[in-house]
Length: 523
Image 1 (cartoon, rainbow, N blue to C red):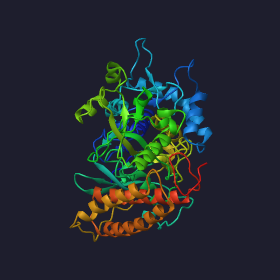
Image 2 (image 1 turned 60 degrees about the vertical axis):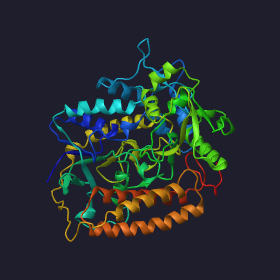
Image 3 (image 1 turned 120 degrees about the horizontal axis):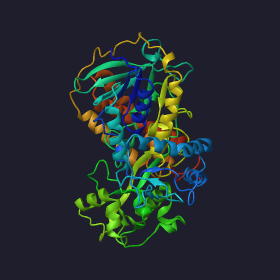
Image 4 (image 1 turned 90 degrees about the horizontal axis):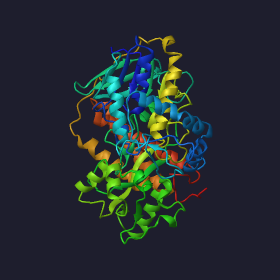
């Protein structure tokens, strides 16, 4: 039985920064990080923009950043959480730079600050247009140098271990549920083992793959949220799915290539195919409006005009500066046959960020004892109904630190549970038809994209719920009868995510931020 003191599921910025701190503080304790793909594959890796951190006290302030966040969240942010995250941001950034992660600087040596939609000042700390990759590489280098951290790639978490597995079946949330680790599949051997731990952290990222078009990597299947929901943890605000307004339009791409918000921050214009700038019709900030407004505006333009794309025009921007700041975007567009210095980039909205998730308190505690959550899989109250650009990496850093401070005071006092049963696969068989999995996954993505996307309606949501119920029962039957595979487990998790988004959409009574139901009033 693999045993560890701290089990971390996910290898993005939240999981790795937490692992580093725990391993440093407790050199005699074992920290295990599991990830279902390569060690560097995470949502963090694909974050282009950067980290929003107030640096310039002359042109910026904590209060301005707080106000921008509250405005983007459309009245549903927890102000105390917003103030906490933004005030702690400089310390967390400084700490990461001390770990060896570097960012772009200007000619005077100061951090080169960018600006993105929804921000009233330049405060985005970045590394060209591959900030997330830079952070991921820096954190992995430090993790791999620490002897008491074990990082296991290609290990898939099947389910969290709670009393449900060895005492009694839990059918509704109740006080006293405790997490004792997780059942984990080694994808090389297909063997499922129990990983028993004192503390378990879910840092599993987002769920964009529930939609047909998403900027999220293939691994973003909502595994942590689905596991937590099955374990009866509280999950909320799943109706708030943020669509990024400007993903490069290519129906064959999965994931869709993200054209960073910072491109509009640098002065790019959104235009229709006939060259008309349209954003000032929807918001007095034009292209610098927050993501929910820009995505809904583009969606309306596409529906009204019958077009598939709008265009991002960078041709008026200084070529040298643009290519220097956005080399990856310029190179990718050129590979797609678009010279951004002369031609407009075809773009359309794509599922990007989940503002809801597993409910946590300011110390990352979930409603289940000894289970914590950080990053996109968690619902902290920072984002409200819509995330302000570049607040997500910041949130992950602040909450992983606060989680560490919480765990630091209790880790030694938590016993390891030796009564956990082995995984029971008795009576299961290898599925003979993979089409049962692949077709259902395609059907789910189409269903969510057509019925539960940027603009929703009561009728579409109700139809989605009926079909999701059928998909759930079909897949649960397959799950109960089959030798498990990552593909089947991901499908099961995605159906749970689809159900939660749809159910909580039906419960939402007013339009806020990234949620829009045409049958409801707008606040």
